[in-house]
Image 1 (cartoon, rainbow, N blue to C red):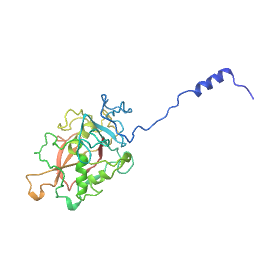
Image 2 (cartoon, one colour; image 1 turned 30 degrees about the vertical axis):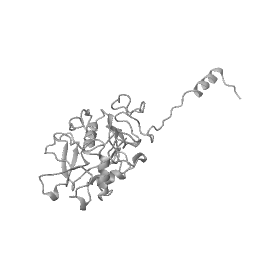
Image 3 (cartoon, helix red, strand yellow; image 1 turned 180 degrees about the horizontal axis):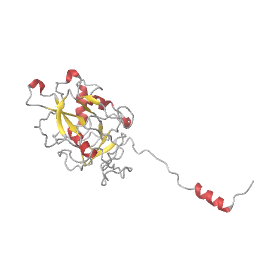
Image 4 (cartoon, one colour; image 1 turned 120 degrees about the horizontal axis):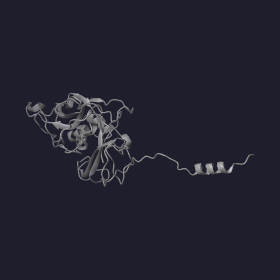
Amino acid sequence: MRKSTPVLTALLTVIAFLPVSYSASWATETPAPAPSVSATAGSQLEPTNGTYALGATGPGGGLIFFISKKGFNCGPNFSKTGSPTGGLCYYLEVAPSGWKSGIIGDPDPYLFWAVPSKLRSDVIGIANEFAPFPVVKVPSAGIGLGYKNSIAIVRQGNDITTAAGASRAYQGGAKTDWYLPSVAEANELCKWARGVPSKSETTLCAGGKLNSPKYGAELAGLFYGYSTSSEHIDRNAPKKYQYQNIWTVEMQDTTPHEVTVGCKCNTAYVRPIRAF
């Protein structure tokens, strides 16, 4: 047998000690704490010191679309201890495209808001709001409120064929706290999806371009009109019909008013979110 030459032996030694690259999942079961450093928009890197960036993958396998440094109430009771770790929430993540079918890139489902018997019924547990049309600012139904709303909608008898029911049934990332966003949360989702800076939670989403890469939304696969879990009371309608409307967030590039109201009897796109 031929002996290895000194050059070959040295080369093999170098190769043996080269670092091995590997990928590891960082979407752990323990949610990140409050942001401790500035988030970099559009970064797909791992969180630094517990901080997620806009567009990064969240614990549930979705995409981070909203960050609050001061934190917000969340959870099933919309409380200061509503996060998975028992405190405020600091992030919102949106389910990936194909969340319903399991096939990435599939369009979002187009669902009714309520079952036929509940189309004109008020949902107990949701604070109904009224605003004249056109809507000039986001109603006060806040960030983090969608979870509590969604539970109330499902409790009323709306099953998995409806917007909130399907959202609550989703368990991406083995998480069971997905829900239909409130109008304020969907409005922030619209801003992120269109690459518009979020300067105020009451400012309507406008401008930009849908699925913009600016903040990492190029793979989100969002469409146009999305259901929210916020009810709208129509004071101009007869009393028995006053609760049949809901807030809808329109994400298309041409509409002059991004937040509208619609009948529960209409269908709209649905995309679950979660807070942590």
